[in-house]
Image (cartoon, rainbow over all chains, first blue to last red; front, side, top):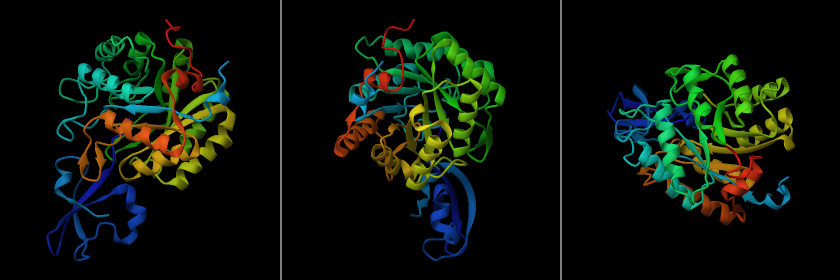
Length: 62
Length: 292
């Protein structure tokens, strides 16, 4: 029983950007996990979930 | 006794068509109803899958351990008389199901294989996926009694150790078959280093000649685990249970699409795709149609 990648979906506190990180990449991103890919600010965690219409609205950080 | 040397270059492709979680809103091509699942399995068999791992859904699309739906789906698949795919029924299709209902369809249908999740874990950071010692013991002994081969799903190395424990207790019989589930939330990450470690741990705990193995990776690790398994001589699982995206941002069109890509990867590497009969030999299953 599985279900694909899980994401943490954020909005940037500074620029408002909506983005997400896959939790299986926590180790790859390290300290940067959760930060806005555009301005580098900390994000606010909004929700968690798998690939879905909801998480698809958030840009994936890779 | 099968000539396993002659099958050394064969790779078994398992397709996990449905799973318990993704819904039509996540990918409209996930097969949910028995008719859809059966046709999907048939297309995957034609594309090269030797094993089909099946989950059922209720009318609302939620994961369900519904013996009626399992039976209907199995019958619809078997109605294709040319289709000799190995059926592997889940015992973990609803984290709220009790232990009895989790094996009711196995008792009734006696599939060639059924899943055996060799430990408990937090599930998607939101629930519990319980496989108690009693369940694992009862389930292992039941499978032996029924002649059902367990597909031992290991989400982390501890579950391999747990399988070794149940082999020593006589609950599981060698040769066992592992499904290394890589990259799942709360499980081991899907990296090559970890895949090699899982294999080495199985070698150490179970003995290299006492098991076969397959693996899959969810999300980002899907392709790495596919090619990793082929390179390491393992078998592979693909399908929408594990990935609703075919590639970045692209929804899978069908499960057969995943199977076709796996076939291509196997051939490009210089290996061959196992037919269901060859898979039966590799997995130490009885020849097709000899089991009641």
